[in-house]
Image (spheres, rainbow, N blue to C red):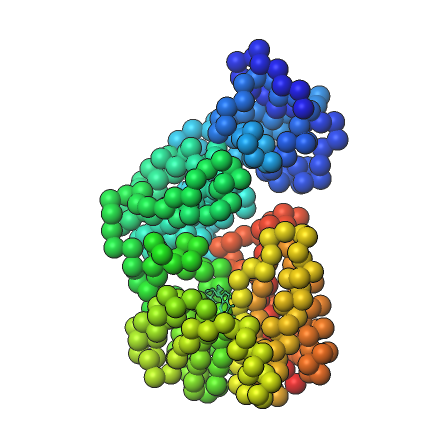
Length: 398
Ligand code: SAH
């Protein structure tokens, strides 16, 4: 990369051979894809990106500290990046969610898929949680909050930027109020149940909205069933199971705080006697119980991501095979396994193959009931790998 510093407005010229990713419309431009930068490079500033022969590609923000040198915000030459730009993008994001049926809670902005790279906004009815995961987006935080104020007049806006990935951008990890302070323990409604969400201390943005649609998918199979839910967090699937008529539900999570919250959520829905929770290491418990021959009608697994790097992908697959094998053994014949993976690098095909390998080792035959991705407020863009990350599978275990 050659850097010239004479021009006032910074222009980034790509190398002659453009990556398939950039061609497909993906907004990331890596430093090694850039041939020449004409102008000053100030982290967070808006720059213009061109092909090697000076054809306009788009406008985005630059960060020389990051491997992703530029993230494009627009490919429209007439679109200026200012406060109004963020207002428009947020309005479009909300209109889209409303069109596909969301009313109270949703992922309002899903980063790249909403043409707002590195921005996440979760809407919990009248409360909003935001994450700005790159320097250029972090700079626009005041404009983003102003747009939220204008569009929604929220009861509260909270920042959950306590995320390690920000350090790759030279940003520190922070969390706190972006509005007047408010009680960060809120109650949301989902599919007819009530869940208390701790916006300040919960995992990620406080609640996993990405499984919102999938939680409804367990409705029929849990009726009258003895259900085990491993990696239950605050008991979202488990509370649903109780609400949909399970006979008993046992949820397991390693986090004491999550389990305490899950118990409160059971109470909140009058399911205290049905939904029970234990703070344990699920890997150990699944192993021990499958050896003991304990049986449930439905076993649900929703572990955290096993890897974020390609180097350890094989280990992650071994991990999925192991827990699913244990999970299947705990299912009474004719019962159901409900299993998820949020590891970005494990493709849907690879996940299905892994489950089949587990079934073979467990000497069980599977019938697929449902195979889905994340809820539709997290849109998938074909070819943009990191937008298609959640795998959700229900199988009958024969
Ligand atoms: N099903 C949940 C989300 C689960 S997130 C929902 O829909 O809301 C993954 C959970 O796994 C986290 O709550 C984390 O605390 C838990 N976890 C991580 N390692 C674990 C382990 N070894 N044993 C049990 N739980 C674990």
